Amino acid sequence: MKIVMFIVGLLVVYLLALLVSSDRKRIKYRPIIIMIVIELILCFILLNTTFGAFIAKSLSDFFASLLAAAGEGINFVFGGLANKGQAPFFLNVLLPIIFIAILIGILQYFKILPMIIKGIGYLLSKVNGLGKLESYNAVAAAIVGQGEVFITVKDQLSKLPKKRLYTLCASSMSTVSMSIVGSYMKMIEPKYVVTAIVLNLFSGFIIVHIINPYSVSEKDDILEINEAEKQSFFEMLTEYILLGFKMAVIIAAMLIGFVALMAAVNNIFSIIFGISFQSILGYVFSPIAFIMGIPASEIVQAGNIMATKLVTNEFVAMLDLTKIQDNLSPRTVGIVSVFLVSFANFSSIGNIAGATKGISDKQGNQVAQFGLKLLYGATLVSVLSAIIAAVII
View 1 (cartoon, helix red, strand yellow):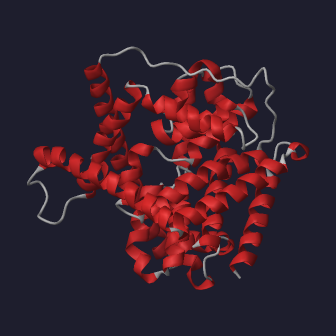
View 2 (tube, rainbow, N blue to C red):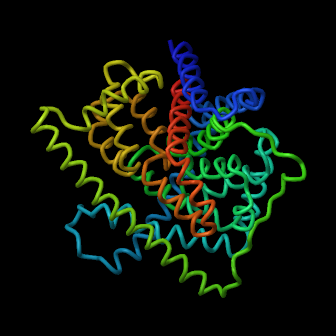
View 3 (tube, helix red, strand yellow):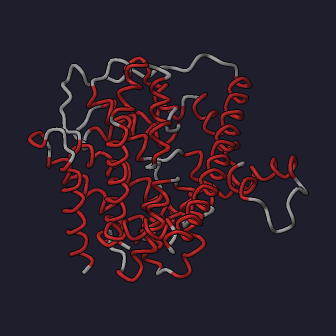
């Protein structure tokens, strides 16, 4: 049954992507098939082998140690603010982002991260059928952040044709920033976070090949990375500390706004229609949950969580999942967890459009025009990754 649902799921995702394809005749099927095979192998290793368990545990322990170190700084400033054993979400999950941002800054400063990103990007370009710039951007977005990645290629960004610009933006929406991975691991199982990050990298390329097919000529396949302005070590530390704090506060503000708005809308719908808005969304998304391999008895609950992610963000959805996961099968929790690990939501359209507009007005306006198509594609990336994970879990 797993294999049947896997094939059905792949076909449905393919047809949904084909509906909005800009040029169906130019779709390259060879790299798509190669990347699906790679995904299956990597997913099996990460979820079903001792080595995969070791990788997931090592990363989990690594981020746990970072969060513990971050906790020292948080307790120094906010110690005694919370009741014992009741640390607020902001202190426990969001503020550690500051410390992780500092580490990213240090690795950037000493040129370690750029070397890793270029290396992985180069290897990816050999199998994904896309250019070096697209491959670099997909890896960089997962490390330096959704908006910050565009700064590293700002000179090329303003000259890119629409199709290549779409791919860069799609990568940014389909991945997650390394600085918040530790926060995710506080809410869902680390092995699913790690698996989703790896799968989304390849799923993003697969969906782009269908929705936005094109070829990059050798003369255009160049990568120009903009070096950051020379700073002293302590200037860099200050910048990344403030960047991490800004990110934590922005996420907190969005959570306050989205959770409150969702509660208000749910109350209104319950009074008028006798059913909450989230429950309605659950029914709308339940067919997608079904083709992802979730049991029929749990598709409405899973659809509810999936829809919440789309209309709010992944943090709100993960919090909702933690509330009901005891009522779901471990398989469903795993599949939904993989689906949730990405930036595919409405607010990301504004984030990406704003980041590109800050570099080039023309390109920012272009991104705003294909914003909904961007979100549609990024959501299919999450669905595809969940389908791949479902056949292995």
